[in-house]
Image (cartoon, rainbow, N blue to C red; front, side):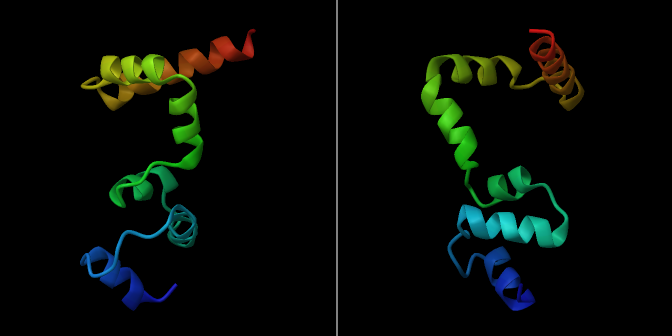
Length: 87
């Protein structure tokens, strides 16, 4: 990955990169893909699929957890993972 290219993206001289390019950049920089996608104004395609399958429920859930601390959201996610393992 050319540093000049990354710099031009950061300065908004290029359009945000595609999801696949962001994934490559995230891997090369050992960064979280979802965070870099958000910075690029994008959402992972797997999340789009989830939202499109259950738009009301997902929107309601996101609005409900909006404003909670990262720790609280993490606890909710862990509880859901635990329940999924037990079913």
